[in-house]
Length: 313
Image (cartoon, rainbow, N blue to C red; front, side, top):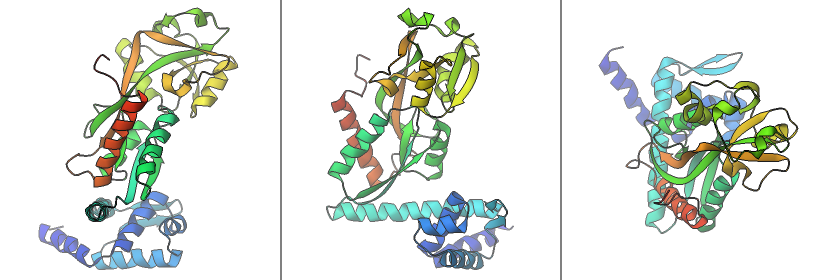
């Protein structure tokens, strides 16, 4: 397609309305008209009509309909990116207008990474923020570290938990945690005060489905070690229950079992396997006012709670 034709098609965005763009985004995220329409408080027929009008105004097909739902065409992928950018800018404008009137209000989309991070960290930060800013609606999306990174880059979330030094993301450190080995209290290793990965490579291992994002780079890859993985589990407490029942051992962040778990003993690595937890945005320069406010508030809360690493650390 010639460049002037592309420009002509993009100029047609001027005739769109917010609802049409919301329908496009909702359809991609939900996968079908029924759930997409409900998520933005429209009837299914209204959502279908909005998308048809959007495609008519652009003169191209944005979505392919199939048995397994909807998928984007090549032009649709480009249009989705622009739609998200447009709605993000509109939301930013609303937030700035609200702050100018002395009112912090609007939507904040947050990306979280369970079970790598303590629920106390997430709920503490959000509760503290909502106490001071009750008119802000916080929408939490949960995924892997890789998914949260992608959501930040694509503008699906405004701010999210990241492991610092994530490419393409700007972040601030709000906490530090430590990976530890969890074994049954009657296990021979439970008497150890510290441990190395090489000490348990033959043990049956219970791996968090998204735990490899930390365990691999931090502990396994530098030493070219493979574990005897028997189970892949999603939830931290389920993993600890399996450990207690003698089904294997596991590695989890210390904060996940800060209140201890009966029948399970935790052991630090030698040297300690420390990692930093940050709050990230695609760019601090273009971040929404609420995203910046949220990060500032989270830093203050983390410092008061003793989560934030000190200079000595």
